Image 1 (spheres, rainbow, N blue to C red):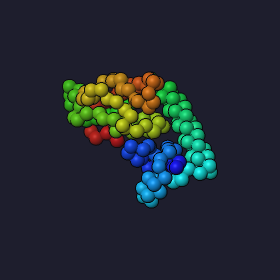
Image 2: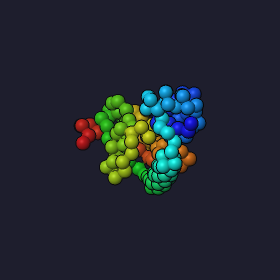
Image 3: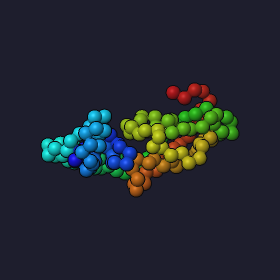
Image 4: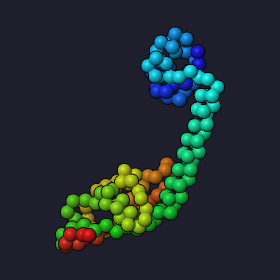
Length: 152
């Protein structure tokens, strides 16, 4: 019997797969526990259309991220932090602070996408990678300014 898996089933297949299994296994286990549904022509066609739509949206998202990566590559953002007289800041500049600085420029970037290779603990200009999409380089400059009172 051909069924469409609704959830991953160990040893049988992943969610969305159309698999051939024995009639008893399909009726008594998969369908009864809502792990699969019969693979009628309508269901198979619906699954095909859904997969094509997902793939289309994935390609569109890749295009958007590629354009965003090319747009922000080489940009410079400024982060402010408390600093001592010698230029050493208290704490470190994190991905969250860099993401909020990019947000002020109009770019919404998730802090998890920002790769700070080594902790930024003093004033100066640093290069930071942003991993928006694999294969597309995206590097920005982060200028750290030391302030004597709380930054806004």
